[in-house]
Amino acid sequence: MNIRRASRAVTQFYDEVLQPSGLTIAQLGLLRHIELAEKITISALAKMIRIDRTTLNRNLKPMAEAGLIVINPGEDSRTREITLTEEGKVAVTNAWKLWGEAQVSLKEYLGEEDLTKLIQLLSKLEALVP
Image 1 (tube, rainbow, N blue to C red):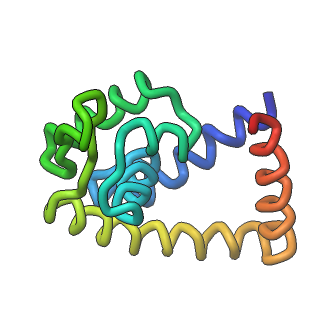
Image 2 (spheres, one colour):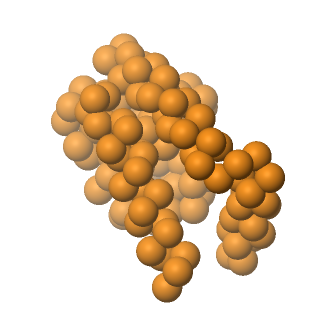
């Protein structure tokens, strides 16, 4: 329960910092993965971020409606590819600057040693499910 409460607190912290960008931390995470991949299928993105396709589709829909991403048919008829629009690139750039400010705040709050330890422990927890 402590991990779940901490997760919600961290999400709320990032969402508050990112509020001027109009993105949540979950949206920024998705858009950043799409940006780095340049073009990626929904299945590949779901696998990369360890989320089921149905949830991913539900999370992508508002971003597509907002014009941040475009979802087009993939190379075969069973796939769909996601790309960032120019508006999406601008949104990611603006939100990424705010994310950097949040990172500095977290580092100051936790201290270098605790932050490093936290990252190591989170990686260990993530490895619970391959």
